[in-house]
Length: 488
Ligand SMILES: [Zn+2]
Image: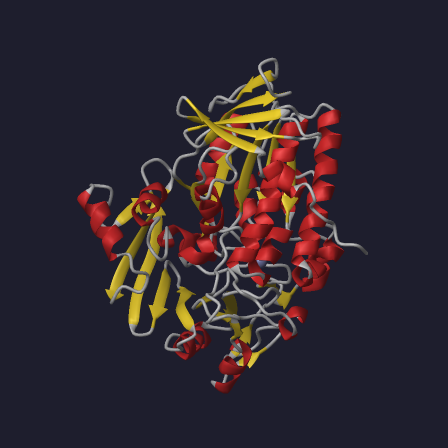
């Protein structure tokens, strides 16, 4: 098979002339390669607000005001694992300027595709954090590969018009660039088919951006994302500017600097076993634990036979240098342990029927939220018993190491998935867990799954509207519905 080439990159990302006029920049292109300018983009305030097809004074002008307009079809591109940092950096360097600036989106926890898109599309709760999960009620694990291949964990996919064939997913991690180029070509065909059929909303899910994020270093990821920018430029050109795009991603992805890469495998099985715990398929007696593993992630969940077993897991892991923190489900709360530091996260109903969340540090400040707590108190956004809304926590903690930690931890244990593990372990950025087929022969530059900002912070942007600067997936869904009537 011949890898797809991208000979158009020069044509669509490199104007033949750039000129300044009245404070605006004009990018002039020779789209058909005949030596004459036939396409002009006006860049005003960093945004391509006017497209001129045919060039010259008699070209057809298409205005692109930054407002929602009825009538234009919208293409939604759902990416996988593209961190805000990547798109924000490319935008700052002048790319993706058919779009308004990217907004930060704090994903769900665990920072995994199915829980994230299930939350965005309201198709949750997700059966398991990942395919192949422990079903507590039946005291058995489901088959990971079987779940995966039949898409059992991906209810949200029915809202999309394109997804890579499941059988190709594994290839994607081995040849991420090749599969990405393949996906872009296929996606274009799907967009053309749907628009030709008169559809006003087309949704494309590009899985291979996750492969790029795991397997490539930052500069290489950016080079691949330029292909996406090129793909978008070409699409807008071919439809003569009369369509809009929305670009979002599901979660972030860590990125180790070259001197620390690759991410190393943390042998969670062995450490638990060495401390007297038994890895089992079912929970039958004290000391039994079930540890479902599928992807290569910086998060793991553990199901334990009883409270004593749960405490033993926590004590085994909380002081390990590879472990960022351990969280355990208690009757009415989540307890967070990081070395000797301990905090309690809880939730209760608010006056408007929503949930309010609290974070009480018992010793130290394991999730580094003291500043956010002080800010919420000062602003009068925290009740006397220490609870605040999810929106208030989001605003107060979006820039901190563990953004929106109270509600995201709570949701991970009780809301987003039917799996509801007893313990969740997050690793520091140098480590991953996973026993999948891939772990023997892949070298990863980054991963996700954990609560930390590096895996949580992703983005959303649109060609015609400005999203609020910081959103969670609930707010993103509300905005998409309000502006685009999607997802229906
Ligand atoms: Zn991934």
